[in-house]
Image 1 (cartoon, rainbow over the protein chains, first blue to last red):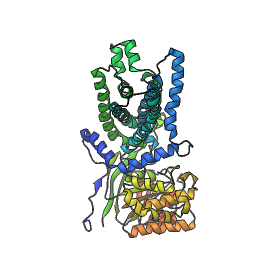
Image 2: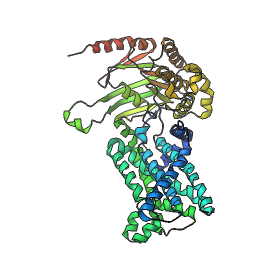
Image 3: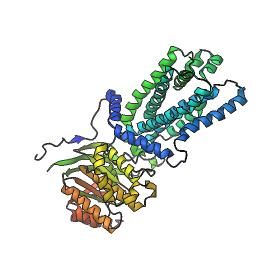
Image 4: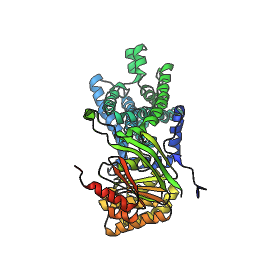
Length: 286
Length: 233
């Protein structure tokens, strides 16, 4: 062969990779594609609010308005007089929205961005990641809706607030991992999308958005109910966020933390493996 | 000559929807394609609608993995498929160009160096900084061709987009493709416009129902394709 010096060798497009290394490969792909990720996040953010007059203010207004509505409903139902209830709702809404949107956007990433990976060889995980990152940015913007309450309700400003972004990270990471697991399956079995839509609606009530960990604790104590409740990966993070802002400390048992982090990590390991093994073939179904 | 891509018995079968599985129709897709693409070559692919041209291009681009067979490439490959594929309608032409570049794995600095040339070639003037949703379809495809060819992949796959725009732009994009070939990039073109293929191709691949029925001399290929066009009852 002539004139091949200086050229890279002919490499197979679909080489064999060891299954156990896939979670690391996915991480490396995402880190390597950070320039693309930055542009995709920028695109998603500007596309979402570019034409709205209020722009990003919507990210702040949404949880505020929801908090007003839920506080109203809750006062009718329970007659609650907890002055901090709106704050708890806002935190619940922000946390839940982040998890729900991370999960949906990464589950739908393959079908939604098919026209982006059709013309160049890009790691398909990047599209699942960009949706999650976009929502993470939005939820940080939404957190500013809490600022007035630090004056109105005289909330403590402590280092505990640093746990807020940490719990947001846990929520989006969990949604991302489970989404990666479901994305290729949803291409072959579209019913998964219907199931997700249902879970998101039901999950809103089954997660501590309108209720708090204490309310649950008082009603059910720590029997099997509590174990089942901790299977919901949003319970511990949302409660953690509330504690960080209000300076309280909910009585979350150790197994609660272990389940929360366990689901996040196992979700990612299985999710990244299933995604890498199936996503490329699954897009043929779209 | 250097081989930039090799295909070895590449087969892909589209899944048949559960409702139609009983009908026992031959599934669509492509079967047993073996091919080597040399550096600097322009390969035309022709075939009827549904003969597997776009499917083959998508496998070459690394979008779809084949069911069986091997594909190996050397250097960067990119696929120009359809008007505005990969573009976002709320973003401006400039922002879309940056996004496209990033999808092709280019860094911001590399795109910075090419952006003026992209704007120039696409003839968009002030529209380059307007959102894509305000573009006409001709403007979108001019932007598409301009961006895709600017990044000079080692192998460019073009699916049915060369025949767009007015006569002057068509001439310009033809020249651009030829220029790419001179700079020793390789091009694979899917097109129904036989005149264009005859003009620029060095080889032609004819597909029929997913089978490769001919590879070689362009005029011969077009002849075979034409003889197949007569409905064989």
